[in-house]
Length: 167
Image 1 (cartoon, one colour):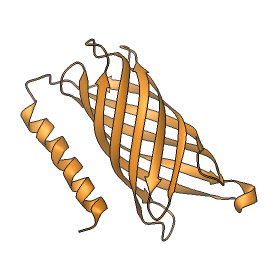
Image 2 (cartoon, rainbow, N blue to C red; image 1 turned 90 degrees about the horizontal axis):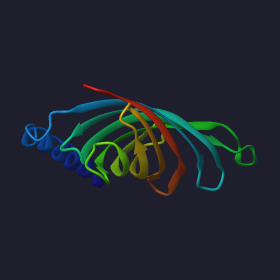
Image 3 (cartoon, rainbow, N blue to C red; image 1 turned 60 degrees about the vertical axis):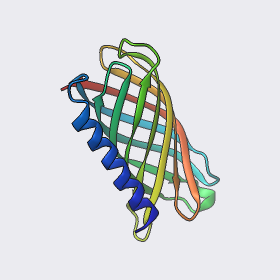
């Protein structure tokens, strides 16, 4: 079994464990829609723009388990041949608020897989740390890095602006 498959299976098991064991801790769940904009951190890559949907299970007021899926489009600078390519990241992680209100400053770490949309691009390991601020009205702004590793590495540094709905 490939390492990436093991990582995805382990992430799914952890998320399932939290869903089954912590239902009584706090039954609040959120669904967020976000816009990602950034700059490629690897030579030859320019603007990165994308969107995502995040389902967030709140374990308690400070800890959440997010599951995120989306699409990011990387532009390639003209001096490197031009064009663009897309990646569909699917990630799970942990989001920790630094106070006990369930809003305010937080840290986030996600891991998962990125599926290339161009022919022959394959699957990459995805890692994405972020720091952000979530307002109680649903707005969320984060500074993030998202890296993809598969026979080499690419990534981008940017921001995520999102709006979350309570379910």
